[in-house]
Image: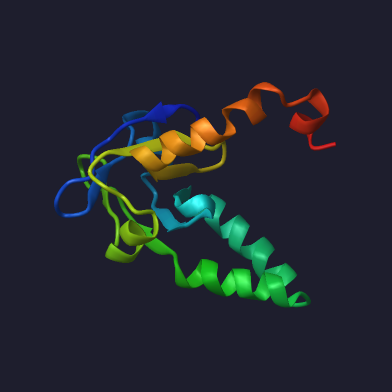
Length: 142
């Protein structure tokens, strides 16, 4: 499981060092893709394959899901962390997520999210009250 909040810096070459505690889970390859709220998602390759397979199955009969699948596939980049645990984020990914030098990597259970630090701070402030007042039913999805 991917949990926690980390604050790596993006270097001048567009490289980001992944949190050390997740490197073993990502050593076999990972997929970086655009995610909601102008963040990036980082999936272990096997987990991404499951997500993509589900999307592909549903896309066969649903035009909105077909559009989602096309965007997902077109926006995904396979990466292999280097010996120091760094990945290179494409210029398109950096632009989409409006990444500056200051980044935040958060665990989202099945994957990691990469945010610009200010965007993450703004998101947290906007949604903090939603979290603190969420009922048990909301948290369970009922």
